Image (tube, rainbow, N blue to C red; front, side, top):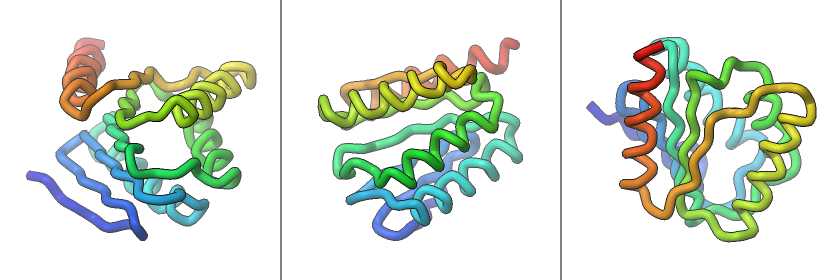
Length: 136
């Protein structure tokens, strides 16, 4: 059963262990904290959280938002939190890639991530990741 939640101008849809965030506008620190609090709860309930992010209507997150999301990632075992992102422009993809590379430089393991052209491709990739996590 899908549960839909509004978080500011953003929409969160939860389907079991799948957490789908549809960013709309510029995510700020409060938005990011609230959304990642939801993701933390999904992880607590299922032992994994499949993050599906639609960034087609988002703007570049604020610096504080990007910092918080990086800290959130570095504080977790991301082997059970795969991230699939779709709707990326070239600039958004470059910023996300830089953020993931910065996490590597800091000596942490970044999440397994996929950049997809469509929601259906992203969902298919996450389904594969769910199977991989279950087999461990």
